[in-house]
Amino acid sequence: MKKFNMTLIAACAALLVSTAPLAEIAIIANPASGAGELDAKTAKKLFLGKTKSVPGMSGVTLVGQTDDSPTKAEFTQKITKKQPAKYKAYWSKMIFSGKAVPPKELANDAEVKAYVAGHADAIGYVDASIVDDTVKVLLRAP
Amino acid sequence: MKRINAPIASLVLCSALVSSQTLAASWADRISLGGFASTNYNLTNSDTPFNGPADIGHDDKGSWSGTRMGLNINADINNRFRFASQFFAGKAEDFDLHIDWAFGDLSLTDEISIRAGKIKFPVGLVNEYAQVGYAMPWIDTPVVIYTEMGSPNGPQMTRESYTGASALGNISAGDWTLGADLFGGEVALEGANVRRLGGLNLTADWDDSVLFKVSAYQGVMSVAGNPMMDGAKHKVLMYGVKTDWNDIIFYAERGDVTMGEINEMKATSWYTTLGYQMGKLLPHLTYQSYEQGKGSPQEDEQNIITLGLRWDFLPSVALKAELSQIKTNKGVGLFPQGSTPAGTVNMVGFGLDTVF
Image 1 (cartoon, rainbow over the protein chains, first blue to last red):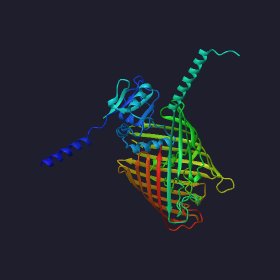
Image 2 (tube, one colour):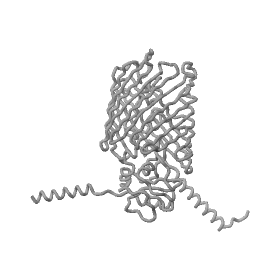
Image 3 (cartoon, rainbow over the protein chains, first blue to last red):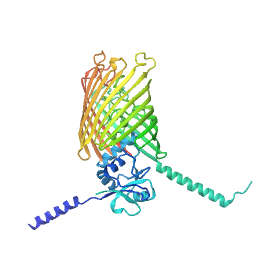
Image 4 (cartoon, chains in turn blue, brown):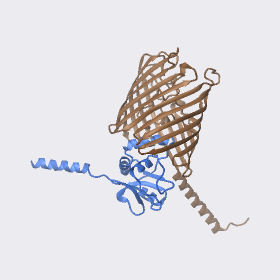
């Protein structure tokens, strides 16, 4: 019985780990950009290259992360509603048909935050836990 | 000779270095590079080459002719104007490196832009990225519509690119994005030209899950030494739907083409694909139908069934395998004119695709 209980506890722990909340994603801009809040649909269209307009901004440089970044995997599923491979295939269609230019890719959250903090026209995504007052949050996706 | 004032020279030199570094950094932000590559192998159980002449068609000796690569360079000159280009080389053209497309794109508003230059031919659901294996489920685009090869006739529905200009517009309405592309110019082919080309694409995209597209264009053939073709009006109408919804992948597309009054070149092609995404695996089934010259002495009727599997086994890399059965009911279809292919030919294919 004791053995059974231990097994049950271990199983529950494993379940808790596997269903633990994943990182919250924040879409960020430069505080001086004048950008207003984004809704989820606009954020999706923006990062799929279907719109270039953000309320309060005249031009936008999108900043993403490289494929090995765990934040990118979270972002593609929460914001663009695509698995990472499908997000990649989607942008392949857009790039190689000449329809749109993909987001500039940086290595990790810290690089994206630093880039956005230094460029008034930049919009990027990071793990919400690293956000500070050098950037402005336009949207949070839990 | 006057001596140069050292502090001023240092200042000028430093300014030049700083400004050139700033300029370089600025341009590094504005220029983006990307590329794609595919390696394909196809083998049939027939010595008659399929979908191309003996040196590039698929036969029982095996063919790597689908192997190809491209390099894309985009320069954002400013927020409203960009210059985009793509270089391409493939085994079917002896890896002759050429400009696939290169054009300037001016955004007049967020919704309207104009382009001029050598532009990817925009008709059909997948023609604009037909060479990018990674962007599609199949090893190659459905041949009954997206090939310029095959028999001397072939479906003749799509082209690689055109030289000219286009006006593009799109508007959003709720979850829908509606688009239009009005284009005109000319197409240079091997030994022929399509002049006075004009066409229109209309698209309706629902939340990036369902895409409807209708394309129509016409042009005038200019073929020296071929009085039957020279001056013929080439008209094409294509329409299709593509979905990627709840892991269900679906394509259905049809094209109709006429070449003046030449009945032998009047063709109708269609295909449909159904697949289901299971994690990194995408099994799919495709049926293609090709009819040309109905009622003429050179009538062709062919259909192809393909069972395929795509496996995204690494980020940005996909491996594909396909089994096809090509059934020729009348004429030669996409086998060479004058050949006598067996009623049914089987083909196996493998592909490795990447983007970078």
